[in-house]
Image (cartoon, rainbow over all chains, first blue to last red; front, side, top):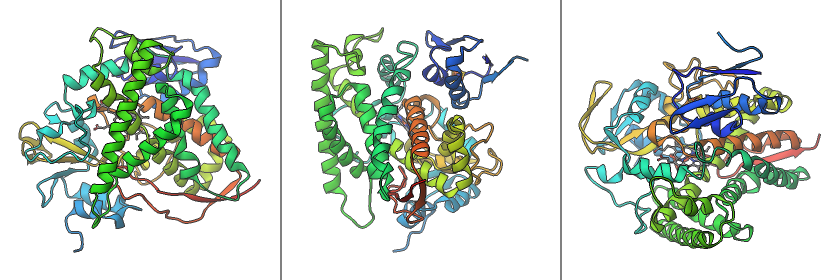
Length: 66
Length: 404
Ligand code: HEM
Ligand code: SF4
């Protein structure tokens, strides 16, 4: 699984970091970073993060990207 | 006397089982001034804008006619009732041991424990022909989990349970009944809980045990340490804000799924779809129906109506969640709804602090129940509701079980 976060939409609510902290991280108060290639044992957590993101900024798919 | 204004009709107990037609009326009537001088807002875009408007205060002292706070304990206010910058400072300090960026793994590491508690509670139900989902499952789960998070020893959990019960009863209200004895009991329970948690934090200061209270007293961030009183009210806030809300989400969740048997079966077979279903439940049957505490710091204009400074401004989240201008087919329960930016956790600077915990807890609770239990039937539909129009949910949910 691959993820892409639309950082223009992302508001830094950090719901994704709580739910999948091995994939998403917050640096300082605002800046979100993430691992685009999701390890298999984190896929379920990432699916949770996708639906919990309050602005639906996370795109996940087998081949994410534009 | 029969209830007259829209707000009276919404708070009237007769509306509790199905307030949604009244919410539709509210959306149609625009920003509605009530006879008592309060203003009700029920449309999505207006509520959302107000939740992000720095001219809108959450502090009860911003009211033109400050009412006596029935929860007053002689302690300082907790951050849910403060405006920035005071709110922001406390929220950041309490967030430090709870979530990112400083403690990103705290909630994730609690998953195993939540699963264990939910599993044990469900085990006790499997052999029963009939049970009450509220008393036997939904009520014990959140208190136990939050006690584990904070680091309350196992043996003290029943005591926290009793205090939480009294506080919740104090929030409820029944027309025509004198609420003061219940409110006094609630105030005492809040104080006792605060003293207990303050004392526990002192013990953790001497001997940390890896839990959130220990981290709160041991790892002060750039803002310094919380005072003892700030710590007490913040810990009590976490316990109270996360308690009945989560109970109601789990209970409303089972009620809604049992009313939609096709979705129930589908979610039992596809538990990976549960996180999205939880979001839809937060839209469709939100545990916090309205926010009664806001007031503007200046005269502000909302949808063409001037709301004067200090007037009670009541944001009906549950009405916004069913606004057809925001959600297509809003009265339909659709667990696969795309673009579900609901107001169930509020929004803006006061957006629910505990949302990630509530999400994980409800997700695990509902998947465990669906997996473990047999065929269920609602003994009564609608069930008996609690009085409160704010924290709305069934008092009991009696279910009949046929083993599969
Ligand atoms: C399904 C369960 C829950 C629901 C529906 C819910 C809903 C809400 C809502 C609507 C608000 C906004 C209040 C406002 O704007 O005035 C809020 C705030 C808050 N919630 Fe929750 N909540 C839930 C669970 C929890 C849990 C588990 C915790 C604690 C761990 C918690 C702690 C808080 C706190 C501390 C605030 C105040 C935030 C602030 O003022 O900055 N909540 N919640
Ligand atoms: S949950 Fe969404 S908005 Fe929040 S940090 Fe993650 S991607 Fe950004």
